[in-house]
Length: 283
Image 1 (cartoon, rainbow, N blue to C red):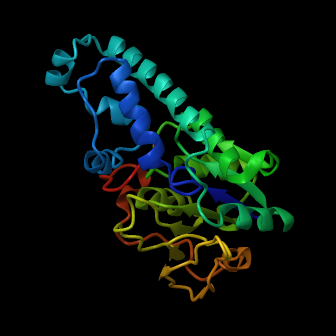
Image 2 (cartoon, one colour; image 1 turned 60 degrees about the vertical axis):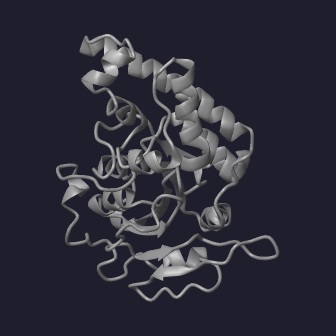
């Protein structure tokens, strides 16, 4: 059966600004670290793929000295791991608090895919506990239990390397051409395309201005019906999907087999992890 594979942060819920950023800053405060990231600073920090990697990136010699941190690399790694464990605890508490709503349409489309017999999965290099908390928030406990979750450090390289998607389709027993990924960032899109999946993009808080050349469809959200829902704005539709006010499951399933729907953009050298990344990674 085909598979519908969601990214987590920015796709299931717009978690970066209202979840990860305050969780990082709370952790820094608790550990007495001389840093607090503003929203503008965090918009740049998300370009580093992975939460631990984001923390490591601030460990310049001056920062290590000013924070009174050990200079031994192994001791620093242990310190970063402790920060990240606490950050994950704070973040999952924020998610459980229910203050961050799911993104429009994700549950509606997942329910339709499940009824059609498709395999459901999440592929994210965020910590698994964080991913599962967002998944349950977005889908509800019953539907969330139908998802396979591939998360955390199950692969060595973060997006835009294709590793997490290659791992996911291999474990699911699905051919890449029979899977659709739903992403929100260029890094995520490059990872999906690099693994041979068709990619649909729903832009999120920090990704609206990124280059999504190569995506099969780019929209503001999947959309939900009125009276409380948000209509979809189509930003790019190279295969003529022409969704109505909502992106329907049939719109996505129709992309399988579309000519060149899994082709990479011409400048996607970083999709194999060898080139520079210039867009958000995950936490």
